[in-house]
View: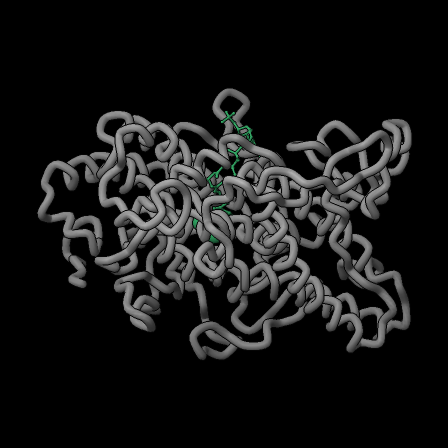
Length: 471
Ligand code: BYC
Ligand code: FE
Ligand code: FE
């Protein structure tokens, strides 16, 4: 597949052959650049960062490392190669050839899915914009910026689809992406978790572990889409997403490791006394980020989701590996419900339950990471286990939004919740403590006291490598 590096917008979609589209995107570009300057990584204008830039989608060829002056990063449009004979794999169009154009009757729904997906990408960059000022090491600073530039590229990916396939409405939606802002009271981002703050690095690692992982599951479902350009762009985005989740999993793992080292070295549970982040505090952050990320999957039973599935717009995780009819017209799926003061499971239409099924897949994936953190604790000989809270805990979307539930799944009264939630969720005091640890360490090879060094560097580089140069 030929890649055009020389044009203003690097791409493998033959942009140069479509002057109108190219001009429309080049018109959007300055707005994007000024958004990046105003709401992207703070004070990064003079930094040279050792970044991976996508310059090709070939296996192994898409990760090109080198120093980049941050604002000069070249955001490109890259779709996974087209598979000529690709078929629709689920829903009422199953067996048809995948679509290269948007069917008129699905225009509104597809646009909505693309807008929701696109909206999250710049939102996360906005949420993370102050973190550079308090990085625990140059290695971590570089990873933050890597995540940020790729989320910027993911916005480009969705804006390309809007411009290329949705005409004037698409162009208006692309403008809207730069007008809504995370946490803005007038024009907030669309989904809840993307209006929360990411004030410290613990929150950042939790976010990239839990919330970027929602990204993985949503992108994987959209990668099944009958609308082939959406499928292809999501497939390529997923390759980048893996690094974001790596940053989260290893980041939290390194904090766990450091907590254990302090506990052993000083024979104490009072990790804070020695400037670490204690395991009970980590558990509270897990509770918070897991629960707000669960909300991102939507309601347990959703006619939207059922329609998207039937229409072929959004499938299930690894749709083609599932052994069923891929139509779900008569199938059942177990979903939770609230019955009095109990949580029970009940059979529901599998079609309406596709959100819940995706959430189930997601929970299993989260648990794998938590198990890894627990092995660190176990290997240190410490008797403590991090756990995912019950999925009903602290929910704002779906059947559990009406009740208050403890991390171990007991429905409690509002009064109980009011009294006890500070044991389960980070308190102001916890956040102030974590915030007090956030002080920039920018000497190559040095690392903050509250986190262990990474097991290895980036792209085979040593830990002492100068991942970021300040000018
Ligand atoms: N907050 O029928 P329901 C990522 C709304 S993350 C606010 O259950 P549906 C990333 C819902 O929109 C991946 N509102 O909804 C990660 C609907 O509103 P309307 C992002 C919510 O449509 C880290 C109404 O409630 N991608 O990439 O089945 C860094 C009824 O709900 C929320 C996608 O989400 C919420 N949490 O499911 C960077 C994929 N939940 O239509 C990036 C595209 C629900 O009645 N989006 N609502 O006004 C979708 O597939 C669906 O929109 C959702 C919601 C799964 C999000
Ligand atoms: Fe993304
Ligand atoms: Fe991501």
